[in-house]
Length: 228
Image (cartoon, rainbow, N blue to C red; front, top):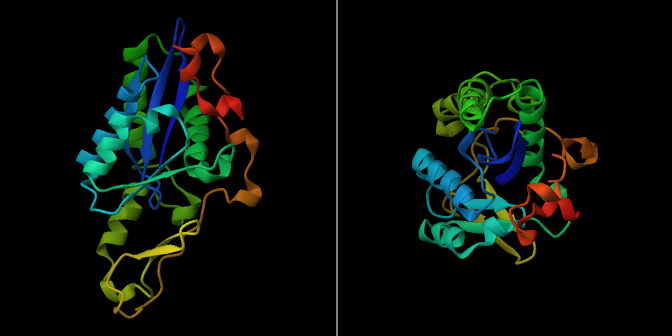
């Protein structure tokens, strides 16, 4: 799951693009820059691909930002055989996990600090994401474990602990894709897993504030969330 947010510095606005693993909540790719262009999102995507080496059929989900629909970005997804998924127009719930992460980032790192410049922010963001968020911060959806620990424990589980074949369904197309062969039989209980903030309890406070007009490099490049 992918998203972009802006961060105010003393003399400028800068932008952070992130990619999360939807299952473990781990930040697997991110990039920080001064321009809200597809180059920023591509840098985050390439970092995530290098980190995870995803198999064919991975679903890449984002909002409907122009950066995620650019030809260069989509070509990278196709080259790695990823399935492109985008939120429905004007529907923040479709990307709630990334919105929740942005809220956590702003409240636990950005709002409590004043950064000298972009390089200072870059150092703080790297520490927050790589050392704190991925390795130390507890998540209720992961039975109060950090993403790194959750992934390690999951990798150590025997195959016999699985009770069913996980499937991805796409209601609009009536298609369903099994993660393993159709003939495999269910085995034992999957770890309990739920959203941090289900839609019923989702708060608009979880949104990052809309990008100010003055921060937009071009009229057509503003964050699509500001139009909702």
